[in-house]
Image (cartoon, rainbow, N blue to C red; front, top):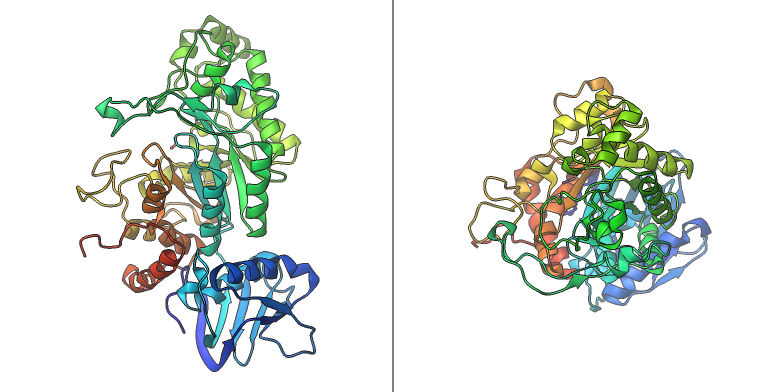
Length: 511
Ligand code: ACM
């Protein structure tokens, strides 16, 4: 068996047989799985110019799809003998089988540019596969640096190549609002553009005067959501309030605590300017979140909730009056008003709700899934409180951290010793060691984070994401083992990343 599959399937063994494919590839399938075969054909066409021919069940074929209700969702079997047989119970299962099948072929099957390929010879193999975790996520911050639709679609393809299935888009922050909301036009006419950005590290305190901005229209979002849906990736929008709100306040100062004018922030860090807790402001937040959620039908929605400094609330007579009204003892409880209100609005429309782990500091609506980012312990705490968890601890899964301690690494959010090598990502255990075994069902999976203060181009995005994201895909698929056994597979996988034009960080840059 070809040993370079990433993520590694659960069970795979060589067997008798060889199949030689040429164009057109003859495939037998039921109508209900047409989407999967269409995507496979589009991928073949784009990479090697091959076509797919649909054949009837009695005709000779190269690939036969079998519906098998006994296979769990997202699982598949793939057998290569005298033909290729794939069995699954869902679109996703079939799609993952095709992804594995392409990995069994030459790297040029992944080529971003059209190449030519005469034939593709597959050795006999028998694979039984499926993921351990249902949430296999990647988060992308499009606020600190905006990435256009084309780049997001490319990232979706890269997720699909690794059998990852969630893309969280961080759509707003102090430095930019990135989604058009017709009822609140100043979010984008004002909030989507900043006048400059830090040069080098924020602590160097140097700024350029190059305007930076951009935002997605409803049509852009529809394109992203559909592209992802066809590849079995759910796009999760994140609207992060009541902190991280300076770009909102640039457009709507009346929602701030002092009502004074502020600009879209040109610093990295956490702005002190947050939303006030007046009824009109809560209603605004609810309206915006509800509108954004509707652009992502059926998707979970992330309501942020992290890093909300309370100095403005402490100094605000209005906020103090609200505290008295609710009998709050701690000013941080005011954040709970947002969390509960936004969660209720989303749940009423059938959305699942996620939030960063700071929301554990006050009351959390039951059913909220916690993204544990500050530590693994936060995931344990959430599970113990009866909440589901997506593990995202920064110490392992923040891909904006340095890839090594070498001085040649590009400037990153934090200095050495805040380093996350690909080996460290690969060693991450999704289920925390000290979690009570009766609570493991609370851990839905894990997610890597791509915060983009220091990621200002597609090339830098590639460098920070890969190959760490490839290592992560195997961790969250649930088949990661010994790192020395993974290394040669990862080395071979780089040929696929090359074919996809990914400017990844070399495994050993000194070579
Ligand atoms: C975060 O990194 N502030 C979730």
